[in-house]
Length: 159
Image (cartoon, rainbow, N blue to C red; front, side):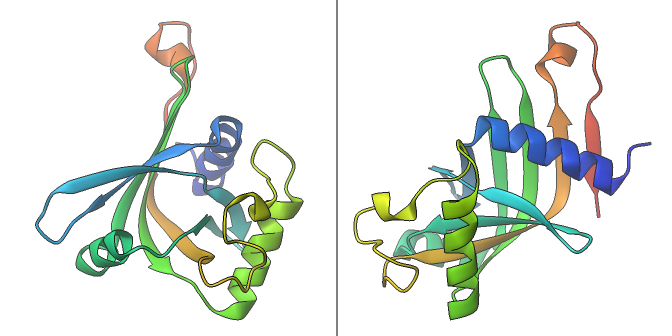
């Protein structure tokens, strides 16, 4: 059986290669809503954590207030997929905002980017720059080679 660390490491490797994820929330009326986001993942001590630099829109805020669980799904043309089902919370204190800003700004491409490319984000203190923290409770890493009958292993972990 694979460990949390093994699955988390494989998840980070695949997610950071694919970069963009479809993230689904559930609205207060029970309907799902998806959007494309660009999380960055890291180990914080012994816990896998995802960070999203994003705008704190009414739609996201209302959805997370109604249901903080989100599904983060990555897919590549080679049919590699990885999914993190998470609890999402706003993490907008100044320390986290600055740390996350530099996490993205200092990471190598394609995961890293200069957040100033987003209109209105001239610094981590910009009013439109907000941080969403993702804490996974379930992970799945599914290499496309498994789907195509070419070998490999699907990794799973859940709390």
